[in-house]
Structures are given as C-alpha cells and as structure tokens.
Image 1: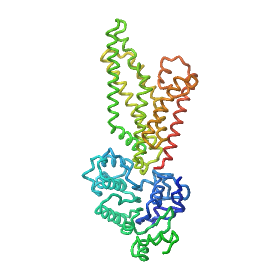
Image 2: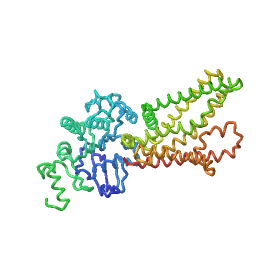
Image 3: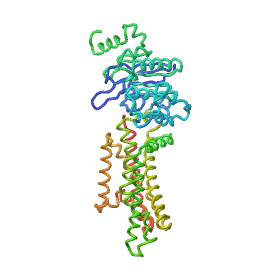
Image 4: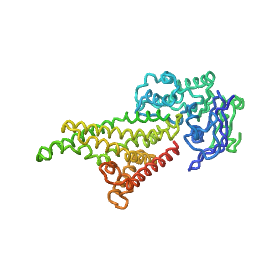
Length: 243
Length: 248
C-alpha cells in the first residue's frame, strides 16, 4: 500500500509550553486512522501542521510526497479537511460558499456541490444563510466542504462535534464506506474512544503532546474489552502508574 | 488559481451592501457639489456663469476625495478581506484550499484596489454626466480623465498600506482603528512637518498635479516616483510576509 501521509519526529511547541514533541507515524492508502487523546493533548496541533495551518519547529511532514507548507497548491489538491469548528462565511449560503471554493478545483464535476449537500442532508437549506444554522448543521456543512472536492486524504478533527446520534452513525458508516469502496484515506481525531473504535482500523494515542501508542484497533481490542479500557490502561502506564 | 482567488475576493466585497450605500452617497455628494456650483452661478455676475463655472468641476474636489473618502473605502475593504476573516476564522477555509498564500494575498489586495477603482470610475462618470447636463460642454474632460488615471498609482499604495496594517492585529476592530489612526498621523506629518513633506506617500495622493500642467523636470519627478514605488513595495512585501506566517 502507498504511504499517503508520513510524519517523522514532528515537534511543535507553543509559547505556553504546550504542543507536541517527537511525533512519528504514517498512514497508508485506504486506511482509517484515529487520533485518540484527551482535550488539549495535541491532536488538533498535529492536524494543523499536516495541512500547513501551523508551522512546526522540527521534524518532517510528507503528504503525497511533499510538505503542504512548501507547496500547498500541489499537496492540498487531494486533501479535504475539517479542523476544529467549521470555518464558514456566516453571511453566505452553503451553495454560494461551496461554489466559491469549487473555483479552486477546475476539474470538479458539475454535480459535486449538490451531491455533497445531499450527502450531509443540507440540500433543502442550500440557499439559507449559514448564520441561521444550528451547531450540528454547521458541522455537517463543514464535512461537506471537506468532502465535496473528492479528496484522496480526508482529515477530520472531532467530526462528531454537535452531531445528533443519527447523523453521527450515518457519518461513521459513510467514512467506512468511502475508505473501503473508493480507497479514500482518513485521519480522524476524537476524544471519545467509542467513536474511534467503531470506525478506525488503527488508533494512535496522543497524551500530553506525546505519541504513546500506535496499534491496530483489532489488536487493542484483543488486549482490552473496549478501546476505552485500552486507552485508560496505556495512559496509566504513560503516567508511570499500574497497568 | 490566482483568477479563482480574485473572483472569490471580489464576490465577497460585492456581497457587502455597505459599499452600495457608499456608492450612492458618493453620487449624492457629486450632485450636491455640482448643484452648489449652479446655485453659486445664479447669485454671481455673468462672468462667473456658463462654461467657466464648470471648467474644473471634475477635478476640483478630487484631492479631498482621494485623501479621505477613497482611503476609507480601502480601509473597509481591507478590513473585510483580511482582519475580519482572520478574526472569525473564515480565513482557514481558504488556507485549506490548494492555493498558495501569496496568490491569496495578491487576490485580496487586487480586489480592494478594484473596489477603489470602481468608486473612482463612478465618481468620474457621475461628475461627467452632471457636467454634461448643466454645462452642455466636454471641456476639460480629457484632462480630468488623465488626472483620475494618474491618481490610481498612489491609490494602490494606500491599499497596500491598509493591507499591511490589517496583518498586525488579530482583532478586526483594533486593526481598523490602528490603520485609521496611523493613516491620519501620516497625513498630518505630511502636511505639518515640513521636513517629512516630500517623503510620505499621502502627499502624493493628488499625483496628477505633478504631471499635468506641471513644469517640473523629469529629474525632479524621479525621486518622487522612487518614494512612491519604494513605499508600495515595502508595504506589499511586509504585508505578504506577515500573511504568509499567519497561523490560524
């Protein structure tokens, strides 16, 4: 399998001392990899450096063979991302902002926007201003904006935020479907172990800015009844406690 | 990608209704200005009427328009496309697209300059129509067209100036306030500090006055061209550097 994403010894520290250090992992084509860790552990920082939203201090990042910080035009062509809360133009309708973003993808099929809106259940609200949307609707639009360009690598930071149960289940199913049928690669972050357990092939545990585990979900579940138990066990070990 | 980025930025500005309001205010001001001249003509003697009265109507108020009104539009445009998007994080949507940051910066600056150009063009057209209606003469129109064209150059530096200052502060309101205060200070320095008079870009906003009807030799104009060009390059490079380093 081709390596879509490769991170070596990534280090990014903020002025307050937080950040991530010595992060190394890779993601292969068609994989669904989950970044699991508590709030503030560094998951979002890793994702932001991958897509070039943040500069890193040392290490290297390779997405489709090049660093997005050096050549965003070539690298981000095949990357779709939703980082933190969706970045949206509140005074515009979903259709308008998707049409605007579609200008950056000249070979996009004509029906890509409508398909994406239908996929996230926002087709009927496509001409309404986003400022009237609920948190869940904004999240769904953020997901549509990440997926409508048919990217090969999709990076989703806490995609379940604000979604109701039905939408969360549908999203998880769709992610698995896209990975299996279309060969898309996913890097998904969450602080909820069950969300990762239900859709990811592999889980990377991030704790206090360090990578403490990179294991297949199957192996983790062989060692513990649930991914949540496995996560707690590994965190206790990392803290120096009893496993 | 540059074209796509420019179209997006221009579309965003067009969607802001406030610019339409400002355009209407601009046309209203032109009407008021011309009518005040017509009224003045009625109360003056015959030598003050007719064609003479409208001889310089198209460039008469241009220096004030260029010094205050268009910089206000440039400031609002730069604020909408830079600091506001940084403040509400919508800039992230652009940074996640396959487009280089210098292209985004260039597109945003070009869109703000286009907005100022539209205002200048509408101002020119409104005054031209009013002049035709009231004086039935095209005398001085060619001179005015040249003046408006020449004044686009310092206007570009004003746009680059606001583009740079919008990168300095994260908060949209603070960025606008800072830009406005610094601009007013520069205008005052240019006006009241004799040593700095020829060194600040705001003193060149009526650029046409140096070229049309001027007896200044080319040798005397070269340093002024150099100052304007140098200021523009500094603001563009500094603004781009800060924009390129933005973490969001």
